[in-house]
Length: 143
Image 1 (cartoon, helix red, strand yellow):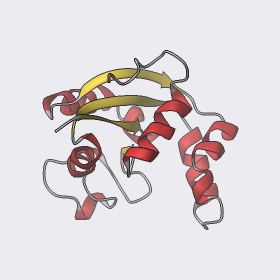
Image 2 (cartoon, rainbow, N blue to C red; image 1 turned 90 degrees about the vertical axis):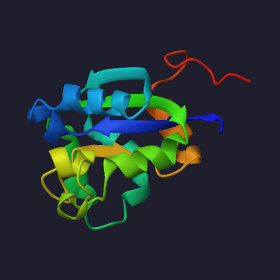
Image 3 (cartoon, rainbow, N blue to C red; image 1 turned 180 degrees about the vertical axis):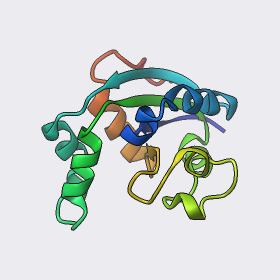
Image 4 (tube, helix red, strand yellow; image 1 turned 90 degrees about the horizontal axis):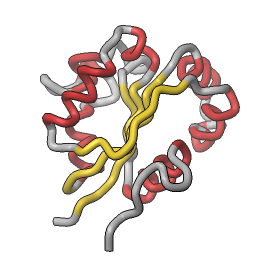
């Protein structure tokens, strides 16, 4: 199986609780390599651009407010079957319904404040990584 890349955001709720380091360690223990990571405070324009696919949904304004309220960590990850594996270790969107020992079960508080974001496909992972890590901030894919 080939290496894949996926994208993670450690959301404001987890950063505010000082759980970013624990989440990064959890990801490394789950077999991910951290290719790039940075702490940033999203502007409204950046958050709206990133979540533009949800702009017509009723929760869009609340999502943008949440994602801009305090810093986040954006992270490019790599491992075999990265997207599917990250979705598994992330856990269900609702932390109350997430399996034990998943990131959202351990660190999420609610559907809206669920600690992490993750890419839902390889195509979206490429787009999301490029959105936050332009140019040479992440090494090109080999091959």
